[in-house]
Image (tube, rainbow over all chains, first blue to last red; front, side, top):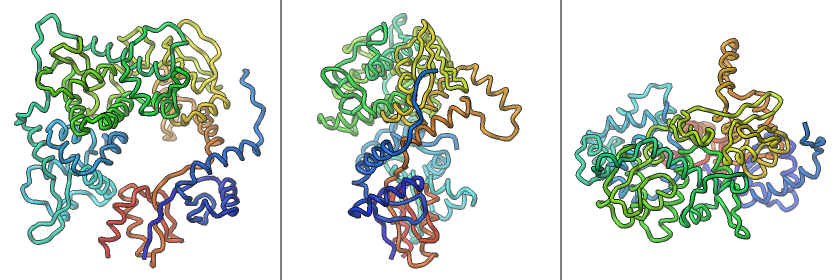
Length: 72
Length: 479
C-alpha cells in the first residue's frame, strides 16, 4: 500500500549531507527519510529554518575563507 | 509554447476556493483575461474547441488530438485547466469519461468573444472634450514616475541625491508594510528580504505582486476579494490612451481607483474627476507576457529624465574581470546596483564598481539570489554588450546559447551563491512503500508528465512530488 509523507526534499553535496546526518544522530529530530544516495534526503518541514541556521553557522566557523579584500 | 502562465498570479488564483471562481467567471472580462494570460497555447486550443459544444466531449476523443510525443504538454494543459476550474470532468450519457468547459466561464467567454455583453464588464468609454485628452506619452510618464517613486521609497533613495519627490499616500506605505516588503524601524524605512527580491523583478511581475497584496489586504478591511479581483481584470482589459466613465462604478471600485492611482496603475486628473485613464501598467497585466518590451520598462531601466528612451536600452557593461560600468544617474538604479556590487566611483552619468565575492555574499545574505542578479544584469545590459556577443556567437558554431554577460562572471556569481547556500530545499510529499515496480512506475510517470516530480529512485521505489492531490487522485483511480 503506497503512502505519502509530507516533508522537505533537501538537495546538497555529500559533505553537507554528512553534517545533517550527524545532527540527526543526536536526537533523531531532523530526518524523515534518508534517500540513500549522496545528495538527497527528506527532512521535517518544521526543522528547515533551524537546520539552515545551524548549518550556516557551522560552515562559517569551519570552512577556510580566502583572504578577502575589496581592493582592485 | 510561447505563453507560459506567469507563475505568481497563477499560484494565487489557484489557491482560491471554487466558489470564488464561480463568482469571478460571471464577468466576461475576467474570463477573457484568464483565457488570454493564464493558459498555455494547447489549453487555449482545448477551450476553444469545447466552448460551443453542448455535450461533454469524451476524454478519449480529446486525447486523440495530441500527438503521442506531446503527452507531457497535454497533461500539463489539462491540469492547469482543472486547477483554474475551467474544465470539468464529467461522464457522457453512456458513462464514458468526458470533459466540458464549466459554466459560467463558458457563457462569459462566449459573451466576451461575440461582444454580446450587456453588463459593462469592459468599462464604458468617456467622451472627453477635445483638447483636454491625456496623451499616451503623458500616461507613460505618469506611470513611470509613480512606480519609480514606489520602488525608490522602498530602497531608500532619499540619501543618494536629488530626485523629484513623489508623494506616496499613506495607503501605499501601509500596503508595502503589510506585504512585508518594507519595515519601519525607528521611523526609518528599511527594506526586507522579500523587498529586495521584489525590486529586482520585472515590472509586470511587480505589479501583479502589489495587486495580489492589495486584494489580500482588501479582504482584511471588509472589501470583497471577488469584487476587487474582477475590477483588476476589468482594468486589464481596457485600452491604453482611452478614458473611461466613473459613474457606473461602485463606491468600493472608486476607492480602489484612488488607491491604484498612487501606484500609477490608473490615472485621474483629480479624485473627483468624472473619468479615469488606465496606464500601461494596467493594460499589459493580462496581455501576452511581452511586457518586457514595453516602453515603461525601457524608461524605468534607462537613465531617468529621458522618457523617450525606447525599449531595450540597457546601460550596464560588465567586463570579464568583474568590473561594472553603469551609465545611469537614476538614484533607484544606483541603489539597486549597489545591492550586489562594490561601487567605486560616481560620475554625473556613470558609476563604476566591481562584483566581488564579498558583495555577492552580502546580497545573498539579504535574500537576493544569483539568478536575480544575473537576470537583472542581462536585462539591463548595454547594447554594446549584445552587439559584441552576436559577433562572437556567429563564429561559435557549437550551439551554446549566447549569453549577453561574460560566462565567467555568470558562473562565478552562481558559485559564490552556492558557497553560501549549500542546500536546496523543496517542500512537498514523498511517496513510498510501493509493493511492485509496476505499481510504482505508473504514478511516477504521471507525476513527471504533469510536472510535479522533483526526485525519484527506481531502486527504492520512492518519488518526491511538489503537489500530491493529483497524484493521489491518480492512484485512487487505478484501484
